[in-house]
Each structure stands twice: as structure tokens, then as C-alpha cells.
Figure 1: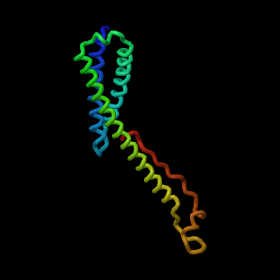
Figure 2: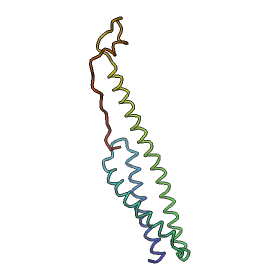
Figure 3: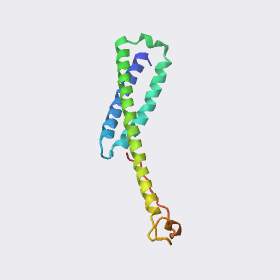
Figure 4: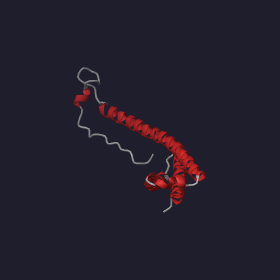
Length: 148
């Protein structure tokens, strides 16, 4: 395959990946649950593999200097735009992960506090020491699904 054809294919894959990441960023920016996110992530993973293969192929090709400079510039611009979208994507994903961890911590703390509450008074008339004399309470289980 000619170097120019490789560049055109990489340009096409980069454009498709950029569109997917842009869609993902838009969904991540919304406060509601994004049901379409799983499909986008799966497609993004598949295209990322193809992207990496094309990048490797181009890096190993000594004839890249023969490719039209305008086409090479289009590829550079597309990759730069893709990298900007990835940087935004990283920030949005980290924010969602942080929010999920914080939510889980709040739920966990509430469950632990609820478990430590007593329903009766102790011998000295306070509730603080009565926790050790409580009947067995099974642990509280909390989990989160994979949705963001």
C-alpha cells in the first residue's frame, strides 16, 4: 500500500474517532444518565486499535516524505484536534469518576452511621455505649452499576 493511501486511511480513522469522542464529551457534559455512552465507548475502543495500527504502519514507512505536504498537514491538524478532544475527554471522565466515588463515599458513610445507631439507652442512661449491646445487624451492601 502506498504511503499516501496510508495517510488517507489514518485521516479517515482519526476523523471518525474525533466524532466519537466529541459525542462522548457531549454526553458526559449532560447531568442525566447517558444510555448511548456504552455504544460509543465500544466503538471508540475498536477504532482506537485500528488507529494505533495505522500510526505504527506510518511510523515504520520510510516513504512518508514523498506524501503531498498538504495531505500531511491535514493529518497533523486532524491529530492535533483529536488530541484536544482527548484532553477534554480525560477531564470529563475524571470528573464523573470523582463524582461517583464521592457519591459512593456518602452512601457508605450514611450506611455506616445507620448501622452504628442504637435503638435503646445504655445502663448509664445514654445511647453512646449501647452500640456494643445491640443485636446482630447484617452488614449493609451498596453497589454501583457501570453507568456514568
